[in-house]
Length: 294
Image (cartoon, rainbow, N blue to C red):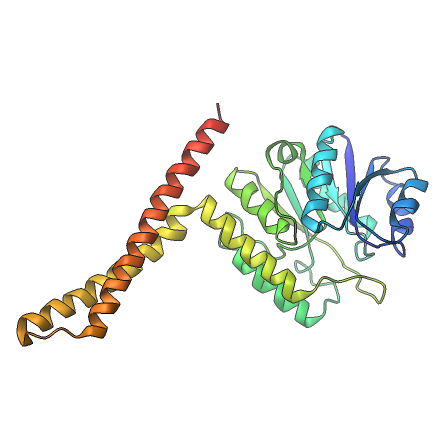
């Protein structure tokens, strides 16, 4: 089986050479996506004779992952492993994340930092990852412990069926939601992360915001009836209760309570908008999926 290792890299001249040299011991197929770096990342990668994809400007982590997906597909990879360039991942763990795919037990394997809790993860990052994972799990069939790990393995079927579109950190959630909806099996294996002074970290606020927005967007697309239908029922229920209150008050006292009536009307309008959105989006998604299967 052809195993390709893809490395998204932005200004990683401190770590990229040592990472490539270590990975060359286990595979000859390495892709570095130089995402608009302004340092020597591109030159170092080319000097080490790996496949280099260059972005003319910094387009974001998701864009780098997309380029790696497309290149791995072009190279007819049986397995793609995404490996961060910041020096946090251990090369020895590559075998662990690829084994379930080789054994035909999974289509996506995530290297989880929390299955065995061996990684010395800063508490604020641990809390943020767990919150984001809970949000992501609401849209998945499987319940994961580390939905934001960049250390993953993807099967040939996943590369064939899924093309990421998110440009930012939300790509991790996008891939999982799309894969789960398509029926791909997702599993996790324990890995150890090495945090240090030379490892780069993403801004936790922008990371969390990006992932949250991605979760909302892709959940609404993949499950429109649930995403919009449930709020529609809630608002319609509130609207009917307040309108019944308004009519009852008018029938007894010949007086309309303005605030109650406005809440009733407003809730009914919002509920109807949500309901129509659910129906229209569900119909649209169904038509698109039907065309794609032809």
